[in-house]
Image (tube, one colour):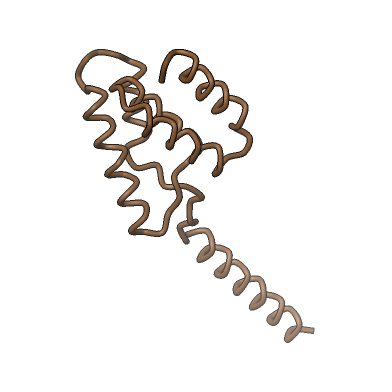
Length: 124
């Protein structure tokens, strides 16, 4: 009977070791956030510390970094970039960013269409 309990003990030990190693591995995230969260916070805060141009530059650099790492932009990234483009008068880039958001995240289609139609109505 003793060899059976030893085998069970070894199995339990091996299982515990495997679980502890699996728990230490870093999971791959679905999206790369880059400076998106900071940019969004600065934009909503509106304290003037970061101009729309500076935020655009940061988000565009973030996209380049994501592309070099094979990562994806999170939901809202292109939508926010489009709003920043609109603030700086770059309506063509704004529309392109919103179309990109819509293609990547179909659940955003109604809102992106609303923004696009609103921009067209207002001469954009």
